Image (cartoon, rainbow, N blue to C red; front, side, top):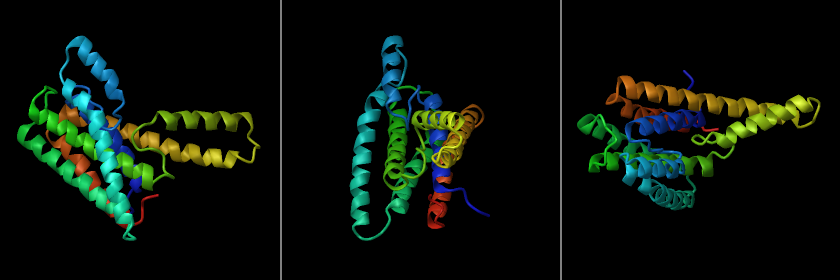
Length: 225
């Protein structure tokens, strides 16, 4: 059985974790952290829970991306790919979240220390995914933020419609297929993340760890492009 490609797994995981985190942790975006500026403003205006996680999400995200990049460069200096090593670190973080969910869940999005810890661990895991994707899977569409991907799809579709005989149309069609698949996969992750929150809030936090295990096999099989 052929495994999904690593970018496909990361896109699904991005949509899943962002949606599950948003629903479980008072509107926290674990992967699309700049959106937390908006939700932090809403929290301040309406007195909602989760202010600390939204306030700390961006600095924690930045520190983890910075630290993981240094680790990747050190690993690369030995002549090895850092992809598997970073996936293992991400897996450890997601396993910790899954265990905390079984012990302390379901989470209600309050300001407790446990909820804050879960939120920042998820942010750290997704920071590793974002940095890894940007630095080592640059040919694949982004696995978390779909705004730029959707914009490019619409630009390419307009170009194809306006000038179907152009020499660049073949490349545009290839981009539409590749990016469209990423958007669909991300959306599927969002839908299943919402279903997990609704029907299995304790078990739902285990799926990202399982997906990362599959990603490790996909990476070793060379399915990372």
